[in-house]
Image (cartoon, rainbow, N blue to C red; front, side):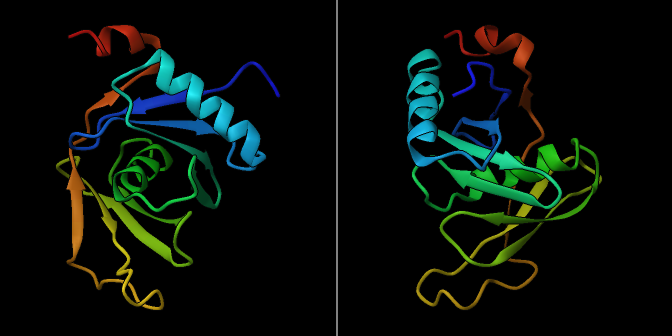
Length: 143
């Protein structure tokens, strides 16, 4: 396992999410990285692993997470208005995501009672564009 990892911590509307570059990691490595991040940054609630082009997000536990999907869209679009698609763990659909002109991040959500359908446009969650950059991690987590 490489000791250097690139991590970005974001706050998508209340549950702080750490995204680590490199989704194509073995489960054991993802677990180790997840545990280290959660120990070092106790306000982080979840960890995901991201690849770009196309955007793919794998949560540490293999689950789906709407807030992490929005974080992935934010990073993919570099915080600028636009649209992107995200393939995320826990669902087989490619989900549409976007950032609007006001900086709000939106992501399509799957409906899990029937795994073959997703909600239509308009059934989106949004989050603000607040972002914790890697160079100010510690100041972002002070009480």
